[in-house]
Length: 451
Image (cartoon, rainbow, N blue to C red):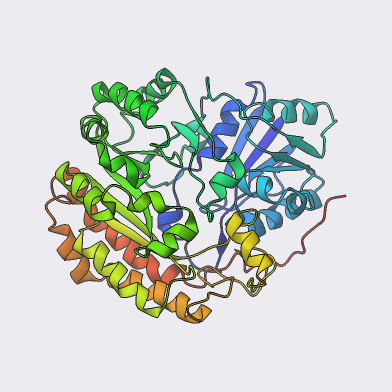
């Protein structure tokens, strides 16, 4: 049996190279490859960096679909299904919009794949593929072994992606993670992660634990960090800011090799944080105290901010950029609010008749960075331009040079050497991302509905 795994891109402009910062290893594809029986031939194609050979013989095609890649995924599925090759789709968007995904797939996997994927393969092998495979409960992640051999020969960013846990206990109202996993988290056994890292540590100089929130369960996180110390790795991950008030946690971060954390600050406005259900961001001294603690331990910060909540106005952008610059953030993101389907935010905006596109991710009028809803405090175009201007200001050369001289950012030679390259990549992306198409603009086909 032959299975083809495809990672869809967000979209494509004819004649333009794909955005480099979006080209990290697609861990879901490696996870599926690792779950596939050994007697099955697996081929993998990354739509972001290579042409998909649609006419190559295969028995089943599998795509993991995110909301931003849904339009392109349906184009790819239509090409295969037109050639009478069955297509199965899973991923976050399949969990959020199963009926929509089912319109373009022969089979849909709803939920996590650890228990369902082997059954999908067996059913396809015997010609009894079902329309829907639903995983109702959270499966154990014990024994999970991603097969990274499928990445050989592909030019990804030189960062090793590893999953230590999945999900988050918080209930932020804009977050699709809490919607899909119902505010729960599962973690892999520490020994499984250490074994995976030991196999990879001679190939990668920096690891990214892709957990939705590596500190969601602080006690388990500390146990994991203690186990990491002997490996001598460099790593980064995503963390909620409340963990920055725990001294033992901060000490273990440093000793285990943490080089920086991505923290969702989201907003400097307490009213916005309350609307997001993120009031924990302001507890125990708030941002200033948490950042002082991180700075004392020389932990770099990747800060993310969201604009477009009801208390935001055109005056919200400049103070936020100044805040990120004053605190010497290693990098930062200034994004507009995105209502992902199924989230409390999306449901509220629909109920208030504020969505500008019924399904923005499929609408031909929509493109990346366009605002899909009507904000209260400004016009959609004002919100869009404000986010782009914030990125331009933060990634201006004077800002990059000032932040590069920050004592925390230059406290480690490896991270300082890469600081300027990473910031230059983000600077270049500011204009590339604006109005980037969802789906391949050169595609001339029509979406083929499933029977």
